[in-house]
Image (tube, rainbow, N blue to C red; front, side):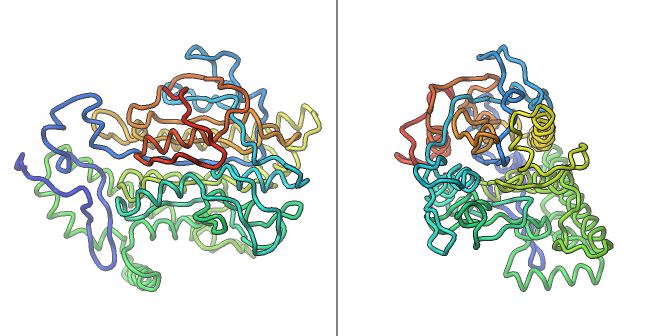
Length: 450
């Protein structure tokens, strides 16, 4: 490779309606920066932000560490995250005031999800006149528009609905969405891995995507077959490290494609199975596919902003793989029954296991002198703390990743009681280069991040 050879950061492999963004390669970075170490190298890489939402609160006794500072032990729910303890910042004491009734009566699940990223109180209506606020992810997406091919990526595991009454007079739109582009426009999460895959890697209209998919199936070709010529030309100019990185990346795309195809074949054989093509039957397989797609989107800088609803608030999903046959929402109203609380903790532990899978994926991807996770800020949490009392204070919230070295992780911090959750979001936007004086009911930056 010519040491002076450079390619633009926004380089794609193209072919027959396909546009595959590349991971960050040495050939894309300024040579003088590559020769430097530490924080200077981190300046090359963009920061990414994501929000992973879990429903119905958690069993707080099994979530909250007893010690603050760096000398803390992860409780049962968070045990799957032990390998990433140094990458986590647990935040106790944050509240979402506008998720409370404030005179509107029941509907805590709808308010929990709709206010989680907006910090605004939703208008109580089951009609079309929904109104809540603009969510933090969409504030970032608007300001960063043009820097990536997709402004944001919304993912989920539950097929949603945006009309009808889903919670005590609140529209279903509130329960099934955490991302809001405007006060009255939700950004519904995509739950079909195939649709997400093609959004990331196909270039053109939905009709063109369908045409290309049909052509691939006819000739039994992978999406990669259409960009092989482009990839071969590129590899001839890359150094050994970049060639290896590109090979690993293209292999990961093919593996993802095969897993989605396998899920589609399995779904097609199920009698009376009405889930859309490409959605795996098993929750664990489904969520891992979605996490892998989010990691690929961040790795290629296809987007820097994403949300993922593990399930909608109020979800009554069962989890037979861990021996929980009762519905999640029903169990969350545990009435202090210890057996039910332990089952809730098992569900929470399973969700944390899926999140650990995502963090492992991010940490396995080198970026500069560190990893992709180092340049991320991934919020994981719920809009309810205890599901039985529908409490919206002392929320279960943590952040993974150092935001390019701007967040001090490996700690459990207890902030002042009733500190607005949106103060965390204001601080994250600041690290993304997005200035926002006001986000929902936020009052300022969360200084505890550093």
